Length: 326
Image (cartoon, rainbow, N blue to C red; front, side):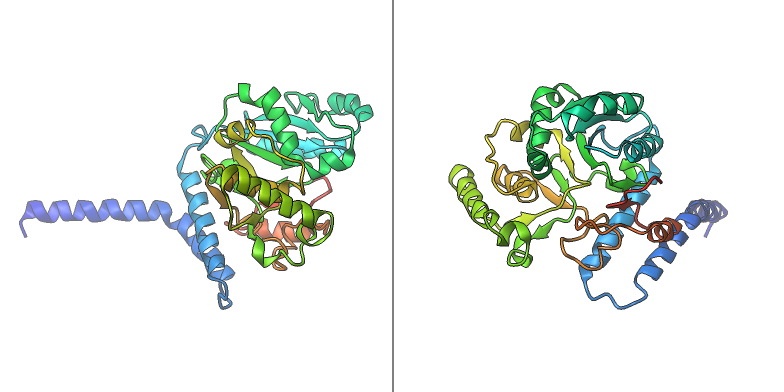
């Protein structure tokens, strides 16, 4: 080898060592996390794939500067009471997502709206009241409430992704880090589950009148759009929606049958949008391993569970329900 070739070879090795040194802390932390997480045999290969996917999303997000968001996001904050906890959640959202546009979606009684506006005026751009009287309707039809807001307000706002955030959802990282580009052009749904796995013992598909309503909704979508399945369910305190999906959905007449946990994935599939899950947030409905981190069964998340996850470089950063001030 000539002296010139030897010199160039040494330069290349030095450059490679510099790159490796820069990345040692980051990948060492990642390695420790994966080693801890998979110290026991992996019985479900989806666990491995979803965790590695979350790791990749987080690393890619770190590689971008904080001034370069992955997507233009807005947050629709859905709440109906507990204004002290709401104020805390909004402070955290602003801290982790500086400059984010956060709009309130009020689902409480009209008599409490003025107090909510006064208490949260500095933390929300504005509060939009769901124009329905029934508390049950507001709880059961989050998707229809979202589409009402979109038709009146949302379509005039520039954004790529909308995050529908419930008041008792605890988010302890930026939306860019948590979501990456997941859901771009479609929907990203928490607890996305093949319906066949839970259909026989899930409330919305096994108890009347909702079991009959679900069959009616399937027939309606099959007749209007030709979609026959396979069907999915979700539970959505942390789901995200592209503007393209909301714009297309806002043009449809969606019947008030069953609830949003079935309607959202059904219409997203039927209208031809990409539907992806968020397994690093909430893997699957009725999965017992998820309950201590994220559930929709009103099982409170323990503070020590959250703090333990925060010690892990790639631990969970999204918890539900957490109904205390953080």
